[in-house]
Image: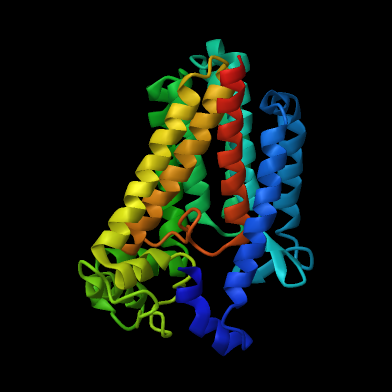
Length: 342
């Protein structure tokens, strides 16, 4: 699907129709190496490494904001560039924060009912990292991380009143961040009524609707998308689900959704027998993150949520997201394997 969605754009921009496919295959190979390494270690060692990894993550998120060190594109400064390759530290932050919260729950679950000593430290550290991600700016990733951590803390025993208080306290800040930044305000109005500006702010979602709607039940055929012909922006990244709908139809997108449901069920099955609290909450957090981002991506391309800029896990083009999603699955498999040994 990456080749189908990107080949014409890649030919036009890089004079190589397989440009994005070759890079994605390289990321897949690199992610496989990381997976083998992660599956070969004892995941419980991450408990000792979570604080150094947290400090490293904070350092990278600060460095990426410094002009000349971090790289910018489209008004966002989120990447480290190494030639034609890039690294987005926010995806690393997503995994490291889940490791940190799982370790915190493991060590101090009896304190999670205490606002000052149990809940506040986790929220402050998570808020600091999400704040640095917001400065890139990347509101979608920061919100997704915060939602997952909130769910994880609730399942770990945090009082729901603390989470509701945090949510209510954050709402004014969130509204200011959305409506004080012009492009976010435009996205919100486009979400509410894309037909009001079909050639401007509503253009992307209108093209997404056309792609999904024209696919019908059986699709136009693999490779036969018309919206990828420079009509639908981000066709091979954030909106690849629309191209799947156009080329493979209802049965194609239903198959994708069923695969993600199976992934969720397999992930929950893999961690349900884990008697060690750190492993259980780590696996649960990683699985929640994958499924939440899947839901958000699909909801965005159908205009059920405002545009967030989150890729579809394992399917959208993107090196950092693919590698760290693969690492997440490797950690879940590691937890399952260790549980069977125990």
